[in-house]
Length: 272
Length: 310
Ligand code: SF4
Image (cartoon, rainbow over all chains, first blue to last red; front, side, top):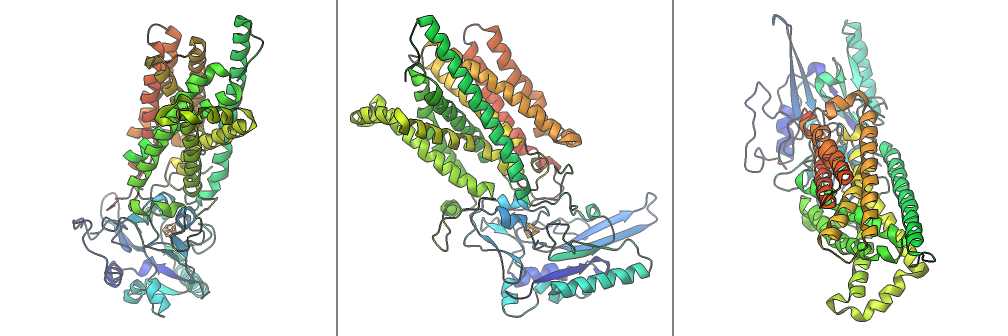
């Protein structure tokens, strides 16, 4: 296995140029249209609104204004699949289409996917969408083809401010910690890393340096993002208990009816 | 249990066909469970009612398979659920409810098919009369009991795994309670028995009155169990139940399912009168369908993301 790689995204230096979105579209030959439509929002500077089947990168524009609108603050964040260590999508995928690659990234094998959409229910980040044209699940491939050929993923390559950085996970984490230290030193004590430790799904291979709580960026907290299998046993045990109640109720009730019939008809006992 | 709503997820677009699958699969499972339990614990008088259940379970599960296949983005790849398309080996993940569910549905398909063929043979349909003695022999005895047990287990599974499937994810509401599987099973039992009662009464089959009354009694118990499960599910959601039952699909549960689909049928049965059983059964069925629609629809008004494409 090659060394695990990831993205470290420093949102403090993102300028919202969307070079990453364009590079991703270009390299992966993603269409601008979506099932015949061109779904551009025409809203603010954010024209693609969310990650989708044709937008595997999306730069979020979060505008914060004071009540009297004299103060304004913009947060920008290039969103992408987090390539989770304990990836919920991979865990539930019933066809085995979603796999972990030798680079520790999460990849959808297109010829295997049948479009059941269970991965969409599982992903806590709203990353996966079904293609309007191919009718299968779509998301960032972490430029698997580029990695196999020793190239940097297209988005990281294109990012002019190095907001998106690519590299071996351990190295990225050190770089990110240094940057948080630097920001704290400059008085920006709100800076922190999201997904760099193991709290969220065992760690996110695409982790972030953020300046506001996760919900400001539309990201789930460690409590909200859970591995699906955590609830399989508790839910199954309750379903089994309900089954036992029904079976026991039927057992008692059928027995009672047979006894009642035997008494009224003077029959010797039940027969099958 | 995690009591925080995650609204950052995308909509899987499990809508109409999935609701119908949950509803019809529930009826098939509930009716089959009762028939298999009657085979295990009942007597010869229960047999005509049992036959009705075996007649409906297999066709219903066939329709379910069709609905699920059509709902796939790529229906021609439905078999990828069971066979690894690149190796030819079986595809099975015990920790994925959809994977286990695919095998469970197949197992139920086999059990319900065998029961269906058995009643066809017993009743001499489709030229199968000559197999009638064999079918009767197989039904009784140890093999028959083991078969009924296996069939009941697969039906219990089918009736409940759909709820476990919803729970095992990150969608708001679904992933905040682990009681949906048990709730769906209770609803499967009530709708399955209601279908049997409706058919037994309206087809005027030669079934003893005491047997139908007993089925009606069982249905009342299943309705009470469903009410209890709904209450427990609401309690398990804690402060989230306001959000869950505040969305328009969620609101259908307190506003329609409980009063019209569960309490009204219980009252109608108590009041009695002509066609009370049929009326109650119809309301239970409508309530069962609305319950599935409500539970399936609950998360989507809460999502903050715009979903593009399909
Ligand atoms: S972010 Fe979503 S799509 Fe990406 S690996 Fe994690 S669960 Fe899968």
